[in-house]
Image (cartoon, rainbow, N blue to C red; front, top):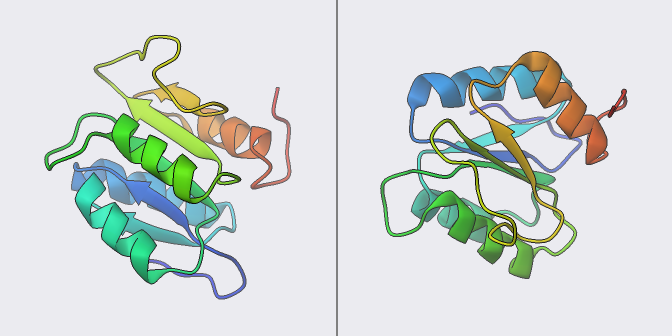
Length: 129
């Protein structure tokens, strides 16, 4: 787990350890702090221990009692201003299933697409287009 002392971390939730590590490394390279969780249940425990997160980046399909869409809805209710990025290589969520304002990215996720998305939700400087 990487931490950056000056900002609330981006919470990366992904059950595939290699993908989670790659995403975390990309985000850290962009100058943001990261904390990782392997599923939604772990993510909720992490959120209970932190004063804030700067964004949630979550996979949809994970083991445990909740999927990523359910986690995103819980996060939106607890932290209404928190940017939500939902990722999946298997699903393309139907309109209305994601919380309002959530962004969907299809796997595999390129560094460019991740940078564009994080710029669009105002976490980093850069071109959101």
